[in-house]
Image 1: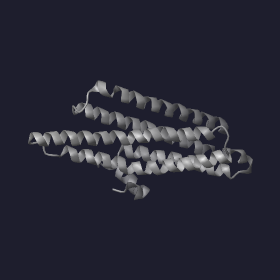
Image 2: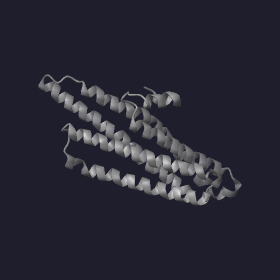
Image 3: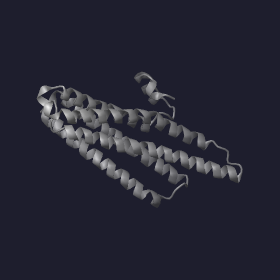
Length: 214
């Protein structure tokens, strides 16, 4: 589909439509890409300021790390949409014979696992992005404070959106009888732990930024 090659107007137009894709997972990935982009901006501007020469190496590493995450997030915009389209296609497979029914369930389950794995990667990487922001938050060029604050909020939103997408697709697997609820509790807890860290780190950064601007 090449969503990342579309204009912002076209992308948001698709989001505004009744089409099943793109949806929350792709939006979370795009939101995260915006967040790490702002972290990179803060780091690059700071490292060019003479007063922050002592932070130059950290800022360089932060910018490089944020750029790498940004490339991943953009790739996941399309991958998440592709995963859900695979699920939609699987739902329309024939189920007349026993062999077809087996193939239907296997294909459907594989598709749903993809719908869970992509937002899992988004959630995990959003936490990594917030860690980068937290590393530079104690000492950076405060002329970019609002950028850093918005980066934290964007990454938190991305993490929350990815988490909700994971829960939705886990619930779908349970509803379709592809797994048992007790089997997924550990997986849900692991994702909850990641989300808790994302929300805590984002709030720490945002509070520091608010204090700097007060």
